[in-house]
Length: 117
Image (cartoon, rainbow, N blue to C red):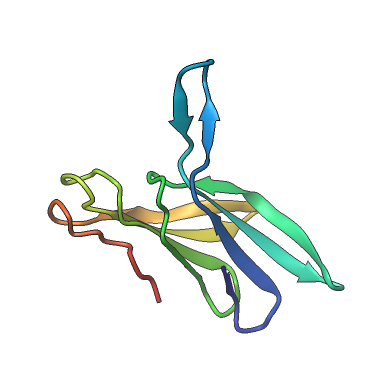
């Protein structure tokens, strides 16, 4: 969880949780990110949740004004196991829109996205 510098918006990450497709098959959702405005001591979700490519979504940060977020998923498989990925989004017209393309780790075990600041 991070909060913007104005104290008006927070970003919250939820790691994967198990659920059962059938009586015997346990699978895991990928992590998700949600963003909330803080208004009158209550939270109001803005935009839809943003899914990650990793059950172990590790890092997220929010800009000073709260309109840009970055999400890191170091366990994503783009250029080999645990190469990682970072995505940047902007809040525009009530939606989180990805800016640019995925930023991926160059090789296996790079774990890009472990830390975002």
